[in-house]
Length: 484
Image (cartoon, rainbow, N blue to C red; front, side, top):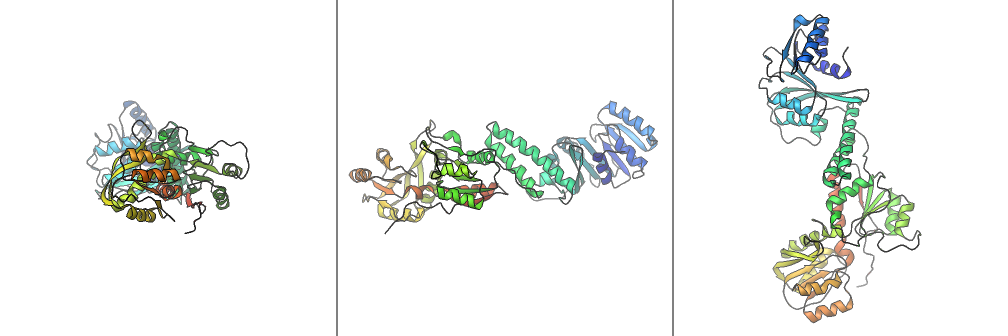
């Protein structure tokens, strides 16, 4: 009697003359011939030793007169003209693909392919090389899981492969065995991804983790993301290697192994934001500003970090890494202003790291603009209630900007001969310095020049993750009220 793996292959045989490549002991051939499903067969293997065992088993089964035993590397020595079905089972998906690629006589043959590993490589090969997958089934045998693919060569031209097709093929998830197989494969990919992640290869690791969870979702399961997985993706968006010394970024509150199904995003983690997260069932809050920046000398529920911990809500905060990230806050500001007056980056405004990466940018202005017109433009860009500025009375041909609380860096803008400096948190004496030096200075607000990153983060996560809900906090608003 065949084991479940070979029985699944036998089930897919349709014709009367079968060729079993890598036959080993010829168990499959013996069963097909003794049952009468096939009337003739070729048992082929690359090694002589298993062929001797095959010959004995065929003799013992009384079907040696119906089977030819051939020493062959793949299909190279097999006369295929009368063969209806070709079975290639019990080897890696890449090797099966190689055997198929080396044979030009596959048209019209019923192919039964059973990869022991890397089934996704085989499916990708079939899709891209003119094969059609007729059906695909799975079976479990103890703790082992297998899939078998029934395909034909018809030289069909196909468009780009559908998402996940190389991993799921034509598995039917109304079949519990298909579900078991897919989830087993997903778990293997997930473990591989987390191993890569934990070795410091966040970008490679998180791709596999996301892939594994998408496969799980396709089978009707629930995602298996953890806080650490989410942190790893944040590390891809805004690498922690760019952390400014003394900045408190990272996983600040909570357990990295906690499961995540819902995430709240806000510029600041306030008590109001924590209560909102608790109310909607979010297990994690992601913010730009650190929820703990200064030392805590006592613990109470008026501190959002304590309130988050009490409600089992984790907090991930990416401060300086998000300022300096490619595509991060200051790149977003550049793109927003560039859409109106066309900028060209000259350099980072305030270099921090040896490679010059830092805060803000110094830019030349292609379409020069007067200070008051720029103030109006910035008010619309940042959706500010007010923009405070000094009018130098001179056209702006070079400007510098730094998000957040960069008011104290005005001397650097003057040193770099900028005509304008855009930032937030400007103090009275800084305005006087700007007037004395004839530079247009703009205070667009700490909140408004940084909250622009929250929609960006939600977009990045939504593009990659399925099965997690991403929510922009209602509590994410300017903490200052204005009377105008």
